[in-house]
Length: 354
Image (cartoon, rainbow, N blue to C red; front, side, top):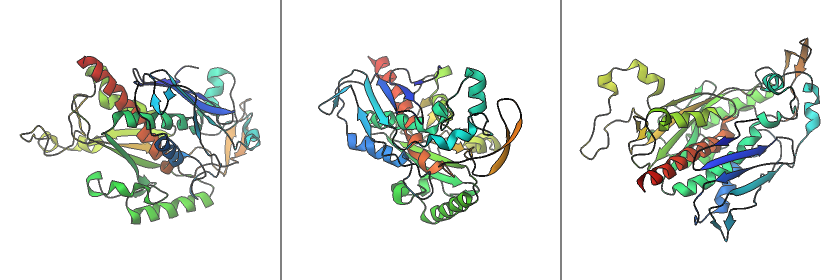
């Protein structure tokens, strides 16, 4: 199976399955001498872990990361950073009913067709549990980036949307509620809706928005390696993501050029920021902002018609512990993938200037 690595200079390779003994990763290319705050790494993992609130899966995992290499006396050595996160609360029997059948809109069917074999326990490699390894690497990338601030938050759950842009909200309020929406009133509506959806045995999607501040001018490469293209790839690689837009996004398609152009101030900043902090694939020093759309979780605690390995129609109902809505736990994953992209371009920029 290919496709387990991300990045060029700051590179992450992940391994492990949802119901295996452990998941983990190897970070290659992190410079030596970086003083790490390992508590901050664990804090990001705690924001992603299951069982943290009443609106997420009740699987209980401490998600405690154990570093195996690449760190000595709290600093990176420049060698590969290896780490593992043990799986502690697998209930593989919850998936025995799908050993020979496929959940609609899940990776079950295509994995079986492509590889001729699949780990049906929790989806195996296709499980979103793999993203915990990304959060570890992203937390280290954040510390490499130092002054760059990356903040993601929930801006929509189903049809309930935060009717404010990132300039109108206090990003310090993101962690003030279990939905991770920085507006208290909107967060309360979202929380209640997710609880109602869970009672119905159904799921719902949503949107995670992200703002990146203090980005220096010059990150990104022209043509095929544009900064926004790599951010798009990073976000679309996250489980359940169905869409990515940055800057004015699709709304910009309805505007005239005279409305959309970001006019310059004398110091090189712009009066507006429809470009989303990126022009020509290169950061321009303004805030980078984007939205990531997540579909409803495919596994429902409702009866659905599906097919089995023999191509026969069968009835199936999801069992076990599943998120009714992934977006509250996806917030640190979006931040992590953004950090991995920026860390890579940060190192590429340093190499280019040597």
